Length: 140
Image (cartoon, rainbow, N blue to C red; front, side, top):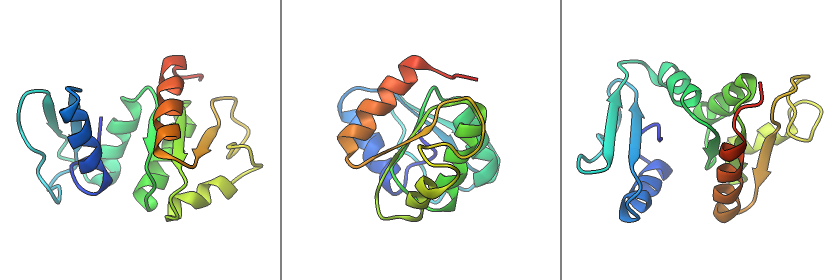
């Protein structure tokens, strides 16, 4: 599941499609880029703004993989954390890297017992840890 078809999400979608992996786009109203159509591609037009769409995207996820981003990415990571959904963030030099400095450290933002936010240095680690987290599922 992806929140759209622009930026890094387009690269992920294209790579998944080349490998025969189904891609579901959870779109905000008036997305900046319309995703391609075709076999294995599903677009859900939520009719919501970006923040509203993020609730559906995160709530529907077994785990969240964040490639790095700005406030929208940060919102999704914190939302996943609060919902007990494991999240993994790629250190990218983008504002989302600052999430690592929140709270008491160790990926804990507050006193919740759910999964901590994990931070990794490579896309390969992001993929591996995200899949592993998805297998374990939600913890709240």
